[in-house]
Length: 376
Image (cartoon, rainbow, N blue to C red; front, side, top):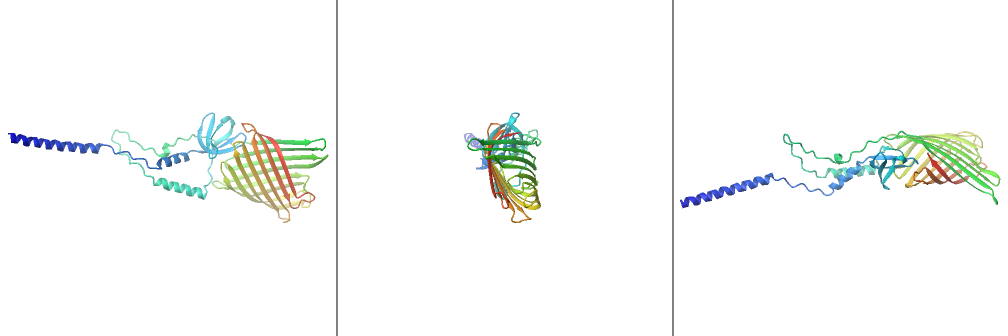
């Protein structure tokens, strides 16, 4: 019996050992696998994608400044955007004329190549393990995508376009040893929509020195532009009336039409150019009558900071009736906001004009000015 008891105990020990090994293997199979470690660069890529999904908006202030950036937040009192150069800027709604989403212009070749390279990197990023199918009566866990993880963008509606403008005036003088007086008044109106822009300016300059009037000039100009949708190309039509006692023509009316191209248009600066065909009519002087002409013009503007801006333009006008009769003009303007709302502005500028056939007047004429303006 002792011999049988030993065998029995050995058999029972062997069975217990096998049972323990089987239980350990089953327990190991039921343990969940270690969660996948985040791949280096995956978090940064996700953050970049979320940042890129923020809506791009345009804010038009009551002082006619236009700023573009990514929408950070908005409520009933203020709007905050992320400006590419100035960082986060908060605007009170009482200082905003209109704001809303803007239409993206076609990307340049470099931008498309950069976007394609980033998409290729994202496509090679390893994804996490697939979720097992849900059992009956159990709610399935749905993996959240980057688009779903991004904050929901508020629905914003841009105000209908309204007229805006400014009125500027400046004067100076001297009396005693010398007698001189001068004055300048300028009116500007504009209206802008998603695809169109209309600008109207009218300026009167008067100066008297030594008892005689030596400057008596009135210029009025209207310009209409329409963008080609999803393109940097636009078309324009303009008309201009000039009355100048110093010029040979005294009074002149001209108009032009043609295409234009926007080379740069971002949150800081804009550069565009245009060429056109038209005609002018001079009411007096050597070239009285109707004359065909062609123009080439460049416009550039830049935001210096949130309170100051600079703009410049130059235009070449060639008359076809007389090929030796051409005109070159250029302007430069610097303006600074004088109050927090930006409704009062101090403007200083210079205007230059070179007429190849001025008649009895001088070929080159330079005018400079300093004015105080109010935007409405």
